[in-house]
Length: 110
Image 1 (cartoon, rainbow, N blue to C red):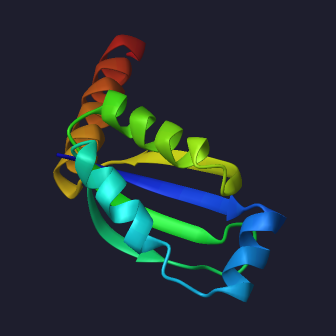
Image 2: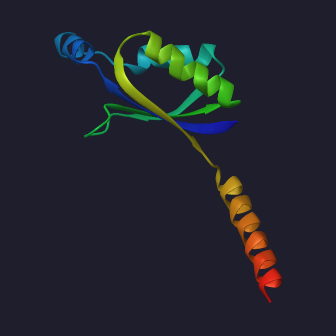
């Protein structure tokens, strides 16, 4: 499974509704992700540009795109961003590949 970070800002209408009737948005979002084959790892509500942050696992980028579309279709967010996250192993692999490229360049320059 691949990790994704989803950040979203609520519409003014959605925020007003939440202030009138407070509820945990994860009660609605969690089952939608599960239906799409994704699983929430952590959710939080940051201060600043975004109102909601999710880190979730999904089998592939197509599933992640479906998650973003499903949340957008609900009409509760005005802007959102999905970022694919590398696992620790993937990060190490990318560092190793970069070192291989650097080594090859050094050999060709001499």
